[in-house]
Length: 362
Image (cartoon, rainbow, N blue to C red):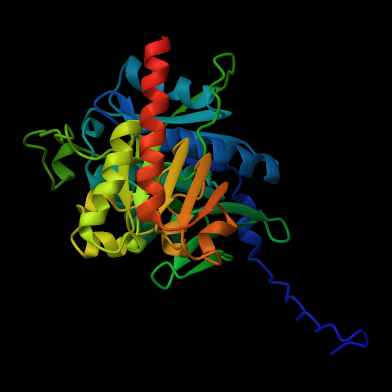
């Protein structure tokens, strides 16, 4: 103990970095696209990448891989409009559909040629497959499903934060002596940046040294996902979620009733999904969906970190819980202490009357 009885903080050991790492400069964002549409997570990461690049004093680059033609060029232009200073473009016919082999070789070749210090990829089905292969090929570190990215300026390291131990803790991971530093981030975790159509930047074309005959995987047919009627929590403006505080499955109908009046999606915690009250597509949290609605109503949810990381960036959070010391009240915008089985139907009726009055007045 020190003289003022305050515990001393342990001295931070300075890490000596490999001098070869100084050659690696810049922040990259892989632009994921399919059938003419860029996945929104790419632009969300572009906004976050802009902050990291500004902190480091380096350029931000987008990576576009696709077939030759105006579409790929348009994606490069969009990357610049969303914050990139330049865009690396790889145009080859064999990049028409995503296959791990050509995309891994193409992205690996780009990294080895231009040496970025940070590479960000969306934690989508495609992104997770690609990121793991590229990190393994490059023999570098990869932090998956991050919820926060920052820069440790002492050694220019990417501080990537993600949940661990089943979502009960948050840990921050750094890759000290390997480059690039790689991270994946799930959709809707980062805010969507403003698009600036006046921004200009460079496009650097790089060839893919590969032929079709060397690729084992062949695309025989494209079958699109049929998402009609499926929950779309990641893109909902309003979500009403229920947790164990709803007590029994019959009471969960109260969540559905409120959501119907508000035109909202229905969400749930992991225990509710595991109990079979709702389908897995409605789970919000680290092992479920990450959401960022304008309004999130949490009824009977304690606010454990596994759930929190999936919804804490909502614009407005209204928490309903009978326990005044529930963790969710620490980060909720508004808190209501009380029985959810009483408060939820009261809110449903109040909203119903308000909306009915508004329609009559209109």
